[in-house]
Amino acid sequence: MQFEKIQSKTKSAKVVDLLLKSIKEGRFEKGDSLPTERELAESMGVSRPVVREALSVLSILGIAERIPGAGTYVKKLNGLNNLKNKAHNLLAETDNPFFAWEARGKFELGIIKLATKNATKDSLSALEEILDQMSNSVEGEEYSDYHKTDHDFHVAVAESTQNPVILETVKSLTKVMEKAIWEKIKSDFHVKELNSLEVSYELHRDIYQYMAKGDEDSAYVAMKKHFEVLAPDLDE
Image 1: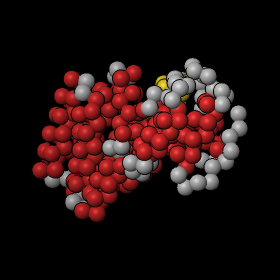
Image 2: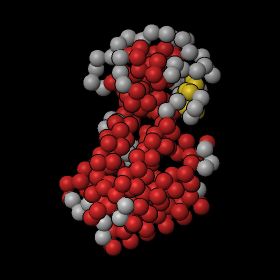
Image 3: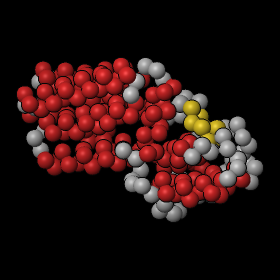
């Protein structure tokens, strides 16, 4: 199925509009599977993060259901006109969190060795305390609390570099990822994948342990693994 190419600067909103139009025109019925992220991105001439953000908004509004590893399915056919403005409002909250995730993956790999080298007793104690909070959230299956401590952990790693510019950059990137769209897709994944919180916690624990040992190379590998393992959670 072909869609028109998108030229607007508000690309995620345009993807939402085109998908809503297709559903209203009957091109997709309730229960139908939408094209994959890759197919939509190629057809519309946009990147996959743009498509992911648009599909996540449709999921938040109950128009579609995103199932990790299976795809996105049409869930609602009525009241789409009223939901269009709500979709645009969600998209206007802040920058695309998927782009922030990609940026974090590159940036945090670049700083982890410096963080390990410059980590102090106090900064390591702060990381250990955050890990304890993460562990408690895992045990209680407190997804929202876990997401917050996840962000706190990465900010604490940045703080360990003793470089205020690096710290503010990581704070800025994690702030973008407090967006409702990001929280929705991560919560959906954690609910469906019962062991995902445990896996995430173990990845963060490994980063801390290598930092505590002063092992820069292993800390780098652990951070790289963190982003490689968790990134597929966001794919179809």
